[in-house]
Image (spheres, rainbow, N blue to C red):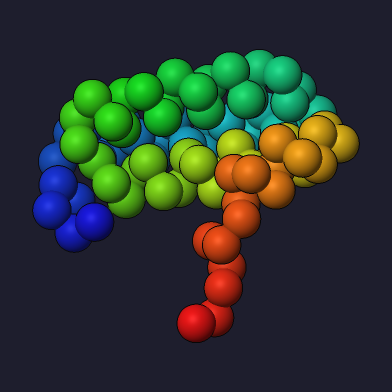
Length: 84
């Protein structure tokens, strides 16, 4: 997870992209936000940004939960918050 995280333009772009997704969610534009998250997941995988992938996946699960898509949210979030 640490490899690939550091100061740089790619990191700043992904963080800004994440917050754009969050703002869309706050504005109750969840469909748009989830669409951007899916794009962010693809970009994080392509660029090998594990920290961003984890972040986008967690937000995706949370937004699926907000939309009432509980089985999908459980599949995404399952095990992420275990204290073991």
